[in-house]
Length: 282
Image 1: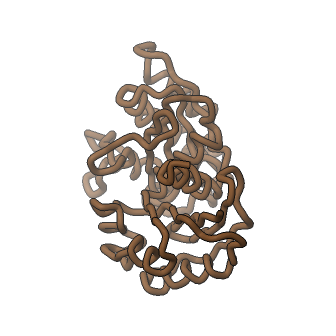
Image 2: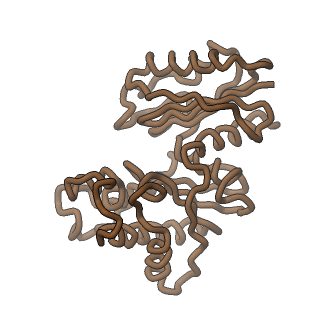
């Protein structure tokens, strides 16, 4: 039997098939259209073009943005505004006549790392992605932790006295360490800043403050970090993140193991595979 997986990001959409929930087919990817109709049509066509050899029994995937309460689509998103309040799961169900499940893309990527990637073997995993923005999720025993409105660690306030970001920028972790936040402050894209520039160590210090809150709130066994600001080139160095996090914890609690994501761009598809397997009770 075949199952379709997808990962709808702000830049790219990725689609694959699995038959055994262990591996998936060659990935089909295309730029994510800003228009919902164009995007959903492209997703439907990609699944058809893969020509499943066995009957399609289910579909699951992640999408950026805050999900609607019934998880049928997204409420809003700064990048995919044209997808807001659109019936994603209903459209796919009508087309393929199979169950369809949708989750936030960061949550799904974190699940992928927990089940198939850097968090394997651990019961409580905190996953953070640091790229254009900052997102995160808590995974317990291979399941996305329950929440009333999702997880938004990037929006935690850190620069309380606004000494770093000033009065005009919201003093959040995301604005301190994300690629977009860095570009807004320095007028340069992260890839244009040499690795030896001291700003990368400053970012590690800011991120450590956010991870301190993660550790105190979620008490994870491991923190997995992904996203272009962590695994790109140049990047926020892992050793510097670990050093600063130990420093800011100041012995109050032990610092959990902090590592980088193992699945890279495929984390969302692996997470969709784990999510669908659980939903289908296979």
